[in-house]
Length: 143
Image 1: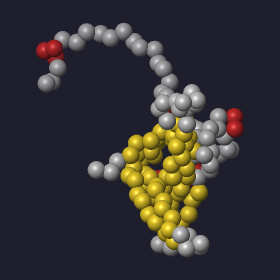
Image 2 (image 1 turned 90 degrees about the vertical axis):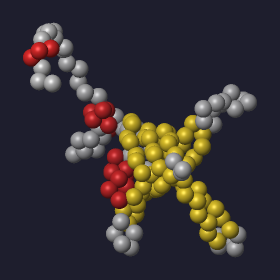
Image 3 (image 1 turned 180 degrees about the vertical axis):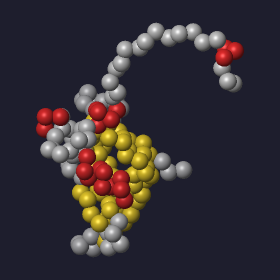
């Protein structure tokens, strides 16, 4: 099984490209803070390369920015290539199956005009007063 779950902050704005076949691909780096502090008492971070494909790639490019917090579920993919100096280089990336926008680095005052998306709006429903519940007779239920 190859499954990864990460939560972190983007270290730079996502980069969107299109393949020769017209498929969107978005790449960004996620800084994920380690759970425990090092010997100096500091919590270090790992910087994980993320690759997202198709419609989700376009959404990531549109709504995520440097500093945005997101959750990524995906799989680890390794590759290698020959560098210009002749040495062999290795790369480890996470190919995202799911990306959830947890929080944007922009607040409402700084958001682009015409952009109506704010992660907090889609996640936090307005609280409503709860009316008193009336009792229902079990015999009146259809099941």
